[in-house]
Amino acid sequence: MPTFDLYGFWRTSATYRVRVALAMKGLQAHEHIVNLDAGEQHTPAYRALNPLGGIPTLVEPGHAPLTQSLAILEFLEETQPEPPLLPPDRHGRARVRGLAGMLAADTHPLITPRVKKYLMTQGRFDDADWRAWQTHWFGTGLRAVEQRLASESDTGLYCHGDTPTLSDICLASVMAVMQVFQIEVEDIPTIERIVARCQTLEPFARAHPRRQSGAPAA
Amino acid sequence: MPTFDLYGFWRTSATYRVRVALAMKGLQAHEHIVNLDAGEQHTPAYRALNPLGGIPTLVEPGHAPLTQSLAILEFLEETQPEPPLLPPDRHGRARVRGLAGMLAADTHPLITPRVKKYLMTQGRFDDADWRAWQTHWFGTGLRAVEQRLASESDTGLYCHGDTPTLSDICLASVMAVMQVFQIEVEDIPTIERIVARCQTLEPFARAHPRRQSGAPAA
Image (cartoon, rainbow over all chains, first blue to last red):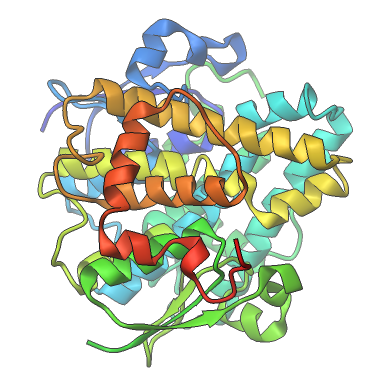
């Protein structure tokens, strides 16, 4: 198996997701820091890898760069099927992908640096407005996920059954970023139980934002 | 193959995507209108199907409701593999899913009714601010996709090679919704060429927002 190159940043949930999946699959990657605080996502060199300037980007030597964390997770699942991060049945797979989408597609894109930049300039938001926005969308997404996890019989020790899946990776990624921004959402006991269990697993623990190169002292 | 139930609304790009995929796969579905303009996504009956209140929701009789358009597209691909909407190789699949994510995850969630509601109330946006926001994010997403499509050798008659994939469905869905909102993005010739070709295919043509039950007269 090749050694991948992962371009990411300590704080971002999308990079966290890929880091966890690589570790769970036992795949090796060199990490390269794209310092979002210094605007390195806008450099021509990085834009050549990823025109949208988002992170992360994953490169397998000899192949075109891969972008979009959910697409990368599916790629890693196909590259190294063990241990599986999707259940074997098509309905279970749809549930896991649906939960992942509620977090990675419906929630996270609203809280990205480019959205903050727009709202703080054209949108005339101040810091309190931005914090209210973050809190609103994290809360909206997590309460909806909580409602599903708490009521659906497929929920187990993890989001779907008793082994971690793509849903757990997306859930833990959102919770990790909320912790970085010191935002709390109340009344999500099922999520808290599942994420606490994820954090006992080495791939999740090692991927935590605060343990990455480039992270400020806590 | 069962007859599915699809809960959607004429105008939304996520419903459009599922409608196209069902038609391409030759799968049957009863469509049920969830009138977003009347707030029907907030009714307890609909929330029981889809706690986040998003649309669409797809139901296969005897199974739990499925949500999140990308998860549903993957489900339909697994349910009825022919004709394939993903390429056979893992790098090609990652490219198609990455392009789909740039549209369905990075672009579309910023332009949804719930975001509009927040910005028009707490965000103190007026109609012109909202239109500028829509134009900005449609433009940002489509210019990034255009840059990739125009420069990458895997682009063919469609986004990836010479048959339609999930990327084309997501691309056409975003363009269809822009048309509904009368928003134009310039300098995207590759996208325009590909979407024009999609529209010659019956599943795309039949799925157009203006041809759906509940759509106002043009």
